[in-house]
Length: 147
Image 1 (cartoon, one colour):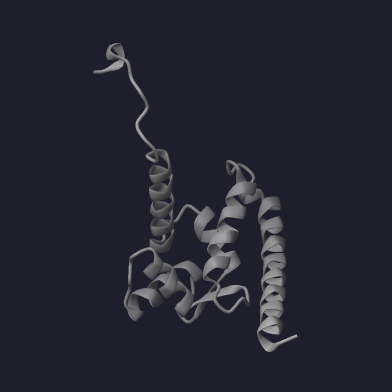
Image 2 (cartoon, rainbow, N blue to C red):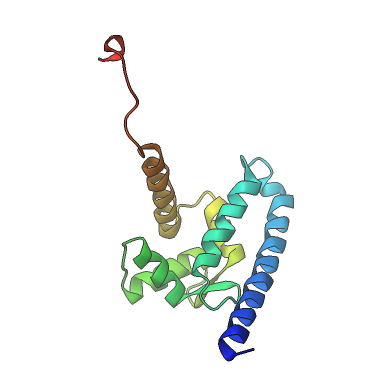
């Protein structure tokens, strides 16, 4: 086996370990009485997990400064180093933390507080829903249906 195949295998192993870890955290949130009334919690947690894994660049289960920077750049919202640090401390609730844990991420997304990152991700999701609805040619209308 060549080194690239071994590297790909190691990457796959890291990803599956990371997903197992995040799934176990999702289980804790599913059992948390604080979120028992949350509408469609299992599918929300699955969507949050996918978004989180997309930007956990080191596959260690946390989003570091570079992961957050890439996430926001991909959304077309480049931020300065100071803005990134502020977002991270807002999510983690600790100014000295240099990464966002999955638990912190879920607390932000499911919590009542409107962190900047939460608002950005919510608007990104709404934009995608709108894009999907407007795809394809307009439906045919009869003369009686026209305004």
